[in-house]
Length: 363
Image (tube, rainbow, N blue to C red; front, side, top):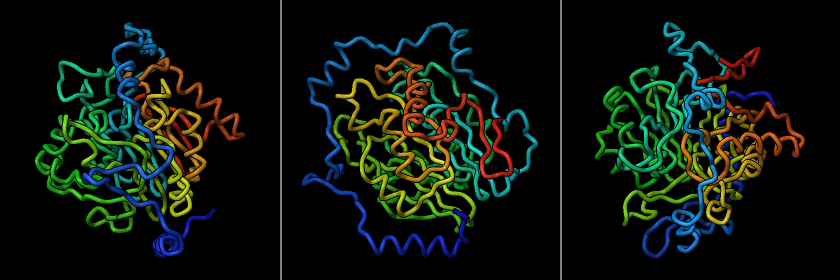
């Protein structure tokens, strides 16, 4: 479909909200956020104990850097190879760069957006223990280009990294707008962040001076925890970024639920989505909180994505699937659904793809 003028887009979204109810966030009697779908089930403590202590890790990440460099290359991002590139070089198009795990750099409609940034070596409150990345980030925080906005999906350590937040805040300060789910404002401000917007599901806001691009906090099926006592005191979510020329969807970290159909009906089609494909085995542990590649393809369809980037794989060994399995199953699922496999693509760490121009290119 042809893109509509901005004024039509805004009224289109409001009309849909008036015509049909949406699934809002909810809390239990203790004030903790809950998942309102029948597809949500948290694994039993015995299942979790088996996952952490009794079963053998089958991801089989090789210890050899040479093997990893061949299988999962880390390449120099475009902004290091062409540092003199002018802002807005993609014009009315969109450029996406994968920085590893769920960290994605998106340039669209005059803004540069960063998702769930983690540049630390471990997804942990401590840098001497916890899940360690087996592929380094392709750049440092100091090497990033100008960033206008950061969107955070939830508070788990592989998506909200204190060290990275501190570094970004030290570099960009109040010029950087942070978009976070409900309940996370206090943590962000205690970390020194000044320009923080906290949103419930279906609420929206924008970057100052760029009100033509709307950031909407949308649902996801997940949970939050950073300390022994803060279970689900903070909301989780996905993000829909709606501009006059492009629409971007960031799924964050999620199990499959029916709200992706709601998001597609209200805000689709999306020009680009970033959808997780990893950390899905064993299914009795992961089904409620992490989609597998087949469910990722269903989200791609539900939200009416023209293109999707595979995220949440190839960086940390968080589950039991073989570390190179997710892209293989993704391709098989796309073929099984009769979809063009190039429309749900993987990138090397640091690699980019440009969309919505005369020619789609990898960089």
